[in-house]
Image (tube, rainbow, N blue to C red; front, side, top):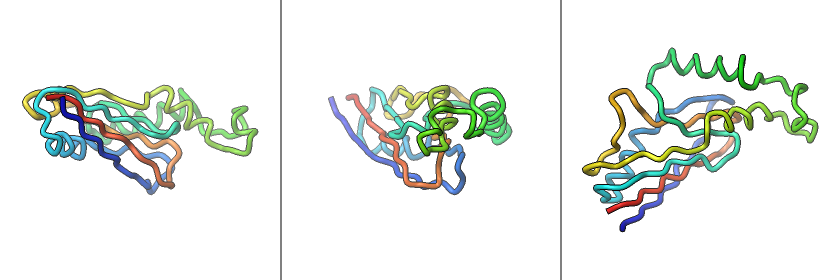
Length: 139
């Protein structure tokens, strides 16, 4: 079995941002030489997410609004975690809701995603350096 590890670094412009990382993940699959297997893409921070969905800007805005209105409004006075001097409890809850990693199959050396699926990094407490691990395993 082959394995290949790559770290992708981010420093987002905004506190919350959604970034399509599909091409970068596909490049790591190519570099790995794995033809059949899986790639794990995982946020290495507890205030970020990795997820699979559609690449459509309206949907991205819907996700951000859903997180703000329904899941975890950005209201520092609302959360006990923020009594520690932090102000990012909402980002922790958003990460917990969306999830921090995905496992994508590799078939014939390519990401085996559905026709509209892409891999995304979701930053919920950004404007500082963060990273994602891409771990490719297979034959």
